[in-house]
Amino acid sequence: MTDKEDNLAEGVYQMLVEADYDCQTLNKTIPLLLHAVSDPIIGVSKENKITLFNQAALELFNLSPQQLKNTLLSDVTHLSSAVLQLSTEAAADIPKYLTENITIKTHSGLMTAATAQCIKLPQSEHSMLQTLIVLKKKDTGHLDESVIYKACHDYLTGLPNRYLFEHVLKYAVQKSRRSGNKLALVAIDIEGFSQINEEYSFDFGNAILKEIGARLQNLLRGEDFIARIGGDEFIVLIENLTDLKDVDRVVNKINTELAEPFYIKSLACHVASKVQKIIYPDELKSAAEQQGEAAALVKLLERHEQETSSKSFSKEIDAVASERISLDSDLDRAIARDQLFLNFQPQVDIQSGDLVGFEVLARWNHPEKGIISPELFIELAESSGSILKIGNWVLTEACRQYRRWLDEGLINHSHIMAINVSGKQFMRADLLTELREITDKYRIGPASIELEITETALMHDMAYSVNLLKQLNNLGTKIVIDDFGMAYSSLAYLRRLPVHALKIDKSFMHEITNDLANAAIVKAIIQLAHNLNLGVTAEGIETEEQVRFLISNACNYAQGHYFGEAKTIIEMTQLLERTGGR
Image (cartoon, rainbow, N blue to C red):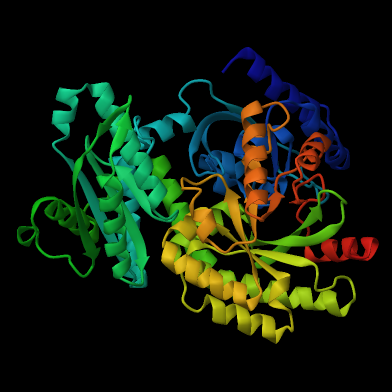
C-alpha cells in the first residue's frame, strides 16, 4: 500500500474519531465526506448492511444505488471475520482501524482484488453506522474481466471455448435432472480441414473457421449455446427441449448452411462436415454403443451426469454460474411472489411530437438483489423456459392497465401498446389463442396491440413465421421487426413476411450525428422500409440532433430518454393526465 493510500484512511480516522465528534455530528459529517472523496467509500450498519456509499463505490461494484443500498457486506465482498466483527457491537477486542487485502464481487459475479481500510466509529443510540470502509482496487494481482473473457473464449472466432462450454454443460445437466427437461448436444466436425491449411494457408484456414463460427451463430436461436472446442470442432447445446424434431431441424439447418461455399479472398471453397447429436437423458448409453463424435458426447454427458467432475475453470466463472442458477430459481417464483412489475416508455410521432403509444417493459424487483438487469433476467427466462409464463403475465397485466386508462379517458384505442414477444413465445402454438383470449377479456381491439419480434425469431422457421404472421394480421394485430439490422439475414425475407414496421436498434443511433457509416445505415433502413410500405420506429433517442436527423429522413416514430424514460404505472398515468394522451 502506498503512503498516499495510508494517508487517506488515517486522515479519515483522525477527522472522525480523534476529533471527538459526537455521534449526531458524525451522522451529518459522514455523508458529506463520502461525496468529497474520490476513492470508493462505504458505510456499514451494525447488521453488516451497506447503508451509505459514494459514486466511486457504485462504479467499483458496478451496481445502481438501489442495488447497493442495504446489501449485506458479505454479498459483495470476501472479508475476514475481523473486518465483519468491526460492524458488530461486540467488537471490544478488535482494533478500531485495520487494513487487509480483500476480494470484491462485481455485479457480473467476477472478482476484483482490492484493499480495504476499515474504521470503527464511536457508537451511541443515535448512530447510523458502525464502520466506514475505504476501498482501493489493486493495480496488480486483480482479476481483470477482459482477461477472464479471453480465457473463456476462442481467440479466433470469439465463441466460448471448451473450458467455458464444459462449465455451462455441467450446470445444464444439473438443471435438466432437476426439471426433467431434455437437452441436446450437436457436434460439428469439419472433415479434412488440414488439407485446406496445406493447400492454401493457415490464414486462409483461419478465415474459414471464423466464417463457420459466424454462420453457426447466425442460424441458431439466441438461447442456444455454441462453442469451438477444438481446432475444427464446434458444439451446440440446446436446452429445454419440448419437441425432439427441433434438434433434427437444427441439424438440417447446419448441414445446409455449411454446404454453401465459403468465399475467402475471391476464392470459393467447400468444406465437408459431419454433424452428430445426442439427446440427454434419452440416449445416454455406454460409450461403447456409440461411434465417433457421438461417443465423445456420451462420455462428456456421463461425466457431468455422474457429477464426478467438480473442477471448474475458475472460481470466478463458478460464481457467475452459481449466481445464475440462484436467480433462475428465484425467477421461476417471481410472478407468484409479486416481484415483477411493468414500465411503459412513451413512443411519439417524430414529425408532430404527439404521443402515439408506449412500449411495455418487464422489470424484476428481487427482494435481496434489488432491480435485476432486464438483459440478464430475460436471458435467464429464455434459457429456463419461464419466459412463456412471464410473457403471458406481461400481456395480461399490460392489457389490464390499458383497459384502466381507457376507462379513465386517458387514452383511446388509437394509442398503440407495443409488447415484446420472445422466440419461444412466437414458436408456441397457442400464441394466437392466448392473445385473442386476453384482448377479449379486457375488451381491447387487437389493432391496439403491436407485437415486437426479432429477426432471429422470425428466421428460425420461415414457413411457420409467415403462416402465424398472416393469422395475426387477420386478427388485426400489428407486427414490428425489433432490433432490425442486428441479425444476419437476407433482406429478401422482408418481401415474404407480412409485417407493419421496422424498429431500428438503439446501437445505430448512438453515434448517428458523427459517424457517417451509422448515419448511412439508418438512412438506408428508413428508405428500405418506406419502399416496402413499412413504418419505422427509432429507439434510444437522446439528443435534439438525433431528432433533427430522423425528421429530415422521414422516420415515423421514436422513443428514448429525449421523449421520456421508461415510467412506472403511476408515472405514466401522471403523464397521460398532464398531456391528455397527446
